[in-house]
Amino acid sequence: MITPIWEGIILGLTLVIFFGFGPALFALIQTSVHRGLWSGFLLAFGVFLSDLALVGLCFLGAVKIISRPENHVVFGIISGVILIIFGIVTYKRKIQIVSSENDKSEKSKPGPVTYILKGFFLNIANPFVWIFWMGVVVGVTANYSGNVQWVIVFFSATLLTVLATDLLKCFGAYKIKKYLIGKLIHWINRIAGIILCLFGIFLIIRVFIEF
Image 1 (cartoon, one colour):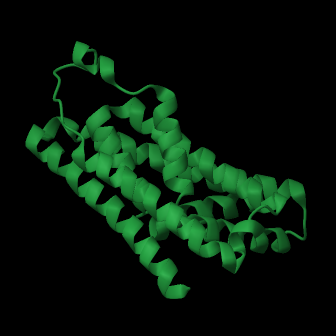
Image 2 (tube, rainbow, N blue to C red):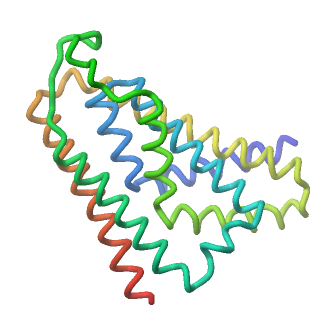
């Protein structure tokens, strides 16, 4: 039982190091800096839930719908549009610097569910995440000879490792917030927004090139 735990942790760290620079990363940093640590944690939890859902879908075989070539174009365009929308909203968001997290101006702050849903859809809209989990689930299941208990332990370790590192990213971004001036935070929002839009445009172009 120890082996799948360690192998799951290793996969989680590998995912973070080599594949952790997608749109979700910039959203986590931007949210933690602009909206606070708790908001960043909620966003990270949303990302975790989307990964959990994708792993579950892989086991259920529902990903066959996405893996069909005729569905690649539709799914790719929808994913790209979602990322572009997130990017535009992030880019145009106006910054409001407050002296305290309990300041009255924070009354308009979105609720917890909003951040969870944003993290969920931001991550699940990335087709690369789907492809990654499809490959991993098939490989791991074969490696453990279909042992469901070991597979569950493996992915639990993997997803919890990814969640822990995402929480650390949020914490790090939040801690440097006090060293950032309003204008710099504004530019962080703009850069994050541009990156999200570029990811979206890239996905759409890539779909048409492959098609």
